[in-house]
Image 1 (cartoon, rainbow, N blue to C red):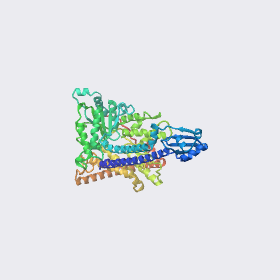
Image 2 (image 1 turned 45 degrees about the vertical axis):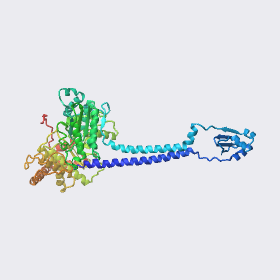
Image 3 (image 1 turned 60 degrees about the vertical axis):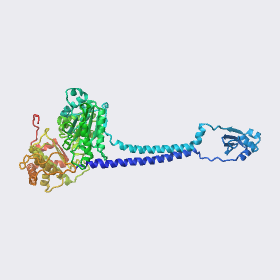
Image 4 (image 1 turned 135 degrees about the horizontal axis):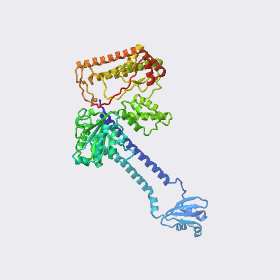
Length: 640
């Protein structure tokens, strides 16, 4: 079921709301604390904390007569008196009356006044008024700054609501050499590159297309398995053409507010038209481009409104707009038919998993900045990685470099990459997962059963490695690789694969007379393969060449799925699946009984050394008379 609308709307909305409230509250608290601190600092600066003694005018007159006063500083009506012993006191006088006249009125003779140093300080001017008004002005300024800061925070929180409708696209500048990607950085994908070179030519020189009346496709949709390089190829098109690249994910359009997705679509296309020629790339477009009518909300569903806006914008393009819309998905089966019709996304580029030659080229690209040892053979690594995508190969090279760095080596060796293959396929070794003696014996016989059945049956792939060391979720593993690249698989190959998957189950039953939980994943693989043979590929003589199930994607949330066949046919399908599984059990049992000595020898060797590489494993097979599988000379043919 698809719970995308729950994951995209409700948690995002709540998260953003709480974040804004938290920021606003913290801003108020910060402003209050700031105001209190500044006020405290001002009070400390305004008052020096010292209390100066006060004297009356009559006492001052007596001190002057006695000759105890050294200097008198007159500042308006304020008198600062310094005595002969160094004491400092203050006094007040009338503003309109001179100090000498005041002292004379108190009976101070002229001789005593002459002995006293009287200094008069002029307190008029701007500084005087600023000093006297500062106790009033400074608090007012602080209050105004405080309210300005608060109003700014409130305005910022309110204005964020108006930015929801703006596009969140990330723009890659064509002049950015560090982030520029070209076709040289993308190995393999030869057919896809040829399809996309026309897009590059149009963006570089659209006149030659328009002059002859040709219209370049408005939209290009890239489909393929995860990790095949869809996003990288889209970036390479922009890099080759030297145009701005607007990149965003399909899920970034949808918000909790109604109409936000459609508004972002309009804003995105408006930005791209201003920057034309340009490329708009929407990754994982199935997040918003799913078939309409399958979810809740009807026509008012936010996701459907966003899809409708994309359809309208793409229809509004003119030939001279010079804006190409590219999209990527690994679920093309769930896209709305109106989205992929001619006139919108009318060019489909399929990216397959790379073949052996492509894998070697991809490995060379990822090995450019890695110091490789002399024994590195990337061709061998490419042969041992069938089914790996470009992302898997990147991870392989990276894991190999990490293994070398972990062991304090300056170069990456071949055995680092060999170990990295198994780490990418199965996961890291679980060396702490220690088996008891009995469990180790059961695992050894289980894996030996897989290996012998795979080596004897003619249509099964040859074994490259057998191990009882736990990796990932597997307690042990048998690594088998095909002799050559295959695009098609036959019924005989599937039957042998099922027998090989059941080899561990049969080995446990034959050797110990009991079954453990070890073969659980093997049984799932065998059952799924047998059911697919019957219901999808027409490989059952009883059911016949009929596809009973769709090979497409899973149903959407809220969509009612009805069985397209009767209960009678369903019973026949179950019986046929059971028959195929039983035939596989009989085949595996026959192989293990016939080659019991080789089976036992491999199990004992696994208990001893835990891991058997291909060379050592094949020596045991040859010693017990089992012929090795050799690669046939195959002439490559074009498959329609």
